[in-house]
Length: 491
Picture 1 (cartoon, rainbow, N blue to C red):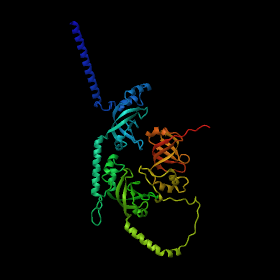
Picture 2: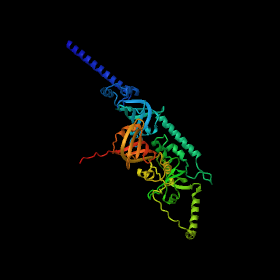
Picture 3: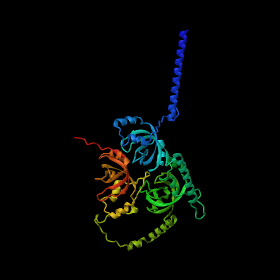
Picture 4: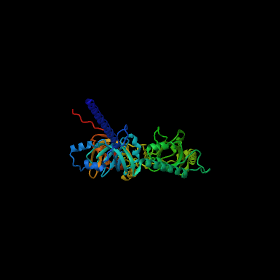
């Protein structure tokens, strides 16, 4: 009996201990998930409340930790998520590094954010100098001004406004701009006083506010909005910036409304005579159908194009005058030929008679990516040492190329960073340093990883033409790709 009582007592004690342990474990498990603020079963994003300044004091330039202590301390924070506020210092400028954004907290760039594909539209909204609240996962630790790299980044607020509210406001502003342009800038038929049937006439400026490169509307939203305008007709006035010069692109003409090429006209076969009539720098009034959206400096393509006026003259008047002049010429050609007196031919040495290039003879074609379609050799034929034009003549032509963006491939001759001169690279195309490429400081790693002899494809903005000794100077440099130089082999 006593033995049975002891057995029951022991069994009861063990059951109580098991119950209490299960309760404590369940309570701790619940508390753990409550602290991290996510439901059980979802992906874990472990946020820590530590500030940038807190971590800067631990790992920054003035840290007193040894390398070993740094590594041990970093393990406590690696792969944890943070929520910080900083200033946008730069954005990746090419399609290969669009997802990189540099953030300044004290001096220069201290944090590099890496965004995943689903955040592409958010990255497009932010601008250099914006104050943003962002989140991300601590992934890499450096030992310079650029201290941390954060992956899986996201932006929550821009200049104090949430991303959701900002997008709503942008859509509202875009709608108001569109309504305003429709109400005030609709063209009317001179005879009937009504807009042409079936046409919604919008100004270039009205659409550029919504879809241009300065618009803050995301590219995805632009593409959605564009479906409301695709196929609608416009009547605009602009300057002919270039004409297609090959048998395969004769039907293309670029039109300037602000700077560079802003609209591409695509003519049908039966309008070939119109393409032949216009020339560069003509001010034309044209109509057409909105076709393809680019959303950059080159805003869109127009199809079903017709030209109404060249300068202040209607196309019908020009055709009529041309036809009359042609008839008069054919009637008097024999008489004129009899009166022609040939002038003596004067032959000049090449050095005495340089080929003078006129502005109107230049064909500056801008690609959809925003670069001018000209090789280094083609540009150097105009401004290089071999061209005998005067410096004044070259200066005049340079106005057409200054501040234009290019994309070339050349050989690295030198690179380095000076305290005064900054981050620079010398590039060879023909002989010696033909191009001096200037980079922002955040490109330091990619620049200094190159070596003499590497072949690089690079982009930049033309700011100084080459002189007799000095090279072309390009700013906003970026390296698109690198082909490493082959090491010399011993015989």
